[in-house]
Length: 176
Image (cartoon, rainbow, N blue to C red; front, top):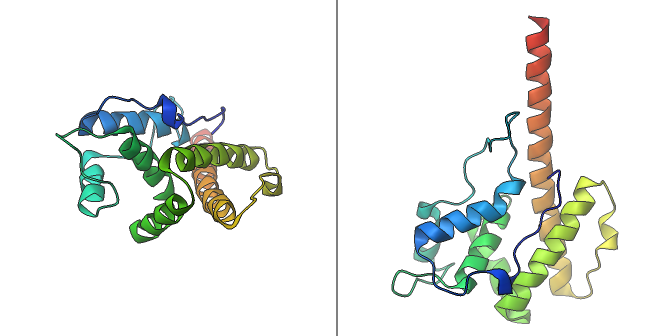
């Protein structure tokens, strides 16, 4: 979370269908800046998205089934949202949140709003700024704001714990 984090907007997602391994790779690449890195710069945590997860989300009908084994940009956008929210929320809560968001806007607009608000909240978290500057004009946006604050806080806490662990390991090694 040290550098500016930007999610791809809906129009930037691939227009052509993607196979499951391509979806998994894309989602992991998009979210990799949020994962803590070890001292060598490698990502320490497991990947946020796997083929098994993708299959499970389809089985649970959180993601629609692929057509001819290919996923659309709508499904990719939903997978990105799922991976962010799963850091804090259960699958049933995520499903309800996605349904609620889609009641007030079409998926491209809802996804882009999610991206913009999440990026703003990540900046507030990183810079220790008040979230009140992130406006929430209606109930849907207010709910989304609070959901994303909790997700941002989770990523921030993980990064801080990693740093503390790294500092303690260094201090321990120096004492030896």
